[in-house]
Amino acid sequence: MKEYSLYFLLLLLVNTSWSKNIRVGRQQKFQTIKSALEITKNGDTVTVEKGLYKEGNIIIITSIHFLG
Image (cartoon, rainbow, N blue to C red; front, side, top):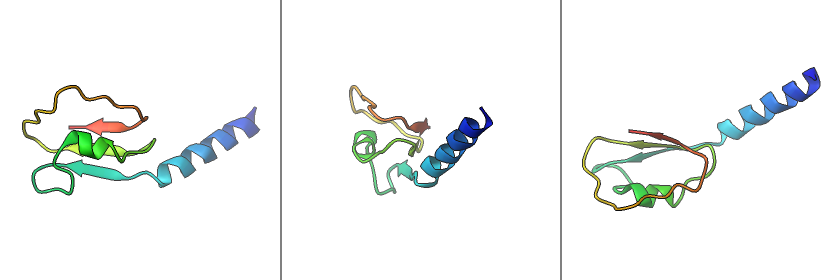
């Protein structure tokens, strides 16, 4: 059982080491939430700066961290 736990921990660490932090805001590369979500991959973090974003329905199809 310890062996499986070690493999799982190693896999988790490797997966998060390749994740990106994608920032959304007026002065950022991505100015809309939808444009940032188009390039996300599993494990990425999308950080949305304060503001009003009128984008309609937003569908997240990847396993990400979404901060605002």
